[in-house]
Image (tube, rainbow, N blue to C red; front, top):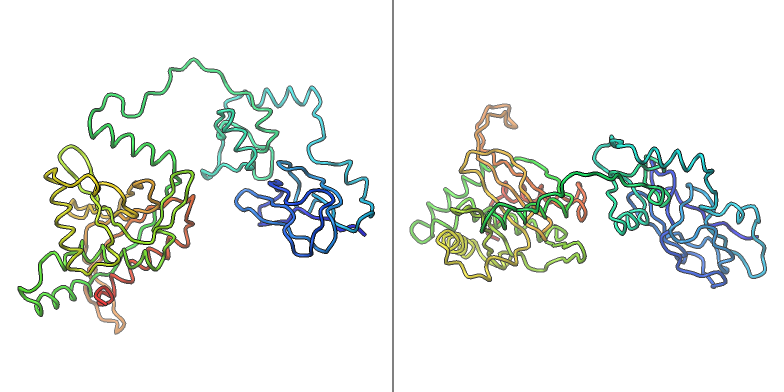
Length: 399
């Protein structure tokens, strides 16, 4: 007897899925457990595997078609076996709307309806592709699928509003020089990425004690820059990036690259704007070299003598507003990087220690912005936790 391939349920909120790609054609042999078709939900992509050996007898839902969860999308069986005819007759997307229904849909889509959501817009991959090809904004289209998801038919039915409003201004219009470049880059960064920021404080009491101890023992043999907060912070971040390599990456909208080495960008405010000089290969350098490089690239950036090759190529960026008294802020990604760490001003705090005795600690606020297209909240939080771990265990920075 032929066995049905069903649209799986991939989550509590999933009500229907989209068939993205059939790996097999009707009549092709299939082994049990072999991937037969790829489907997608609002968030996930999943391969449906063959429940038994046989051949693909029928495809019920074509590529780009949608089906309710647990609905039949195809059949597998032995050659010559029959497929339930009632299933084929109910093939996806064959129902035609009546003229009255079509007119009602057009009228609804012409109204400037505001979408009330938590900021997410659910749409099938095919609907997104069609909307992009037509130049439609998904936010303007009313979805008829589960959770208001936009389907292929919603895009086909959509009638864009015609307005007489003036065309939007060019980004950076009216600005000149570096200010114009910064405006364009910041706008593009926000437009092309899904930016989210996590905030957390690190107890740097032990870090400050470590600095004091090392300075006393080394005396004049150690440069001041070797144990500066910035140097130690760069080292801690580079260690965390090696522990969480998915954060040491870049994405330009087409290509996702994981980088082997850590090249740290350092945001520096100059007279007419902001630049990001780069310290290369910080993951393989001792604190003394990182400190010397930090002083070198930042001072050259300030006086305009930094070589052009050190203005690009960073894989992660740190921006520090602690000297301005800022505690937390939301740094904007230095694209195509997928992460940037904002550093705030150190503050004192009284706490009860393990012995229930009041003691004073020093805390450093950290703000991690990441591209949610590439990294989810949990691994980003783990990465921020690793930075905190190294700052709170400073002797690990010298081993």
